[in-house]
Structures are given as structure tokens and as C-alpha cells.
Length: 105
Image: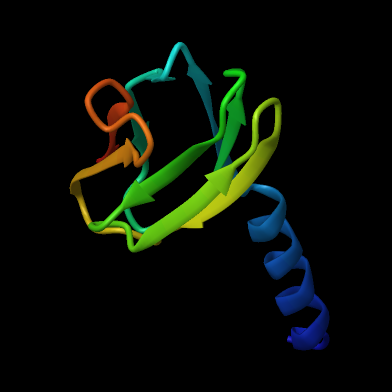
């Protein structure tokens, strides 16, 4: 092949452009949807929008993530690549109601 570096750059840009993004909303101290499905072996960005008038903290011991989200704010959290399985998360300030899971398939 005459231009291997060019081919490598094009493949890298294509892979980056195909990044998966999943949206979560915090409303009434609950995550909506409570369960999200993502592909195994792929890096994913969770976009979390807090629609409550109070802050919430996205937390997951299994995902090794913890992020404070101000009222009305949206933030992105990268996870993965992950193996197939179920990875629970919760809202640290409302852990009885703000619960969910990332299901990796």
C-alpha cells in the first residue's frame, strides 16, 4: 500500500466519529431511562441532564465513576470499553429513588 499513514488517519477519524452517546435525564429524583443498553467493547459517553431543582451526584462503584451534576446542568461521563454485564449506578443524594443500570451486550 502506498499511503498507509493516510489510511490509518482516515480509519481513526471514522472510528472517532462513530462514538456512541447515550442520554439520561434526572427528573423527580429518578434517572430516565432507568436502564440503558450499550455495546460491549466500545467507549460510550453518557450525557446526563439534571432537570431537578437540586443537585445530584451520579455514582457507580462498578463503573468507577462519580460526578456532581448541578440543577439544570448537563454533563458527559465516559465509560468503557466494558465487558458484557450489568453495571448499576445511583444518585448519591437520592439513593432510594435515583437508581439505574448500564446493560452491556
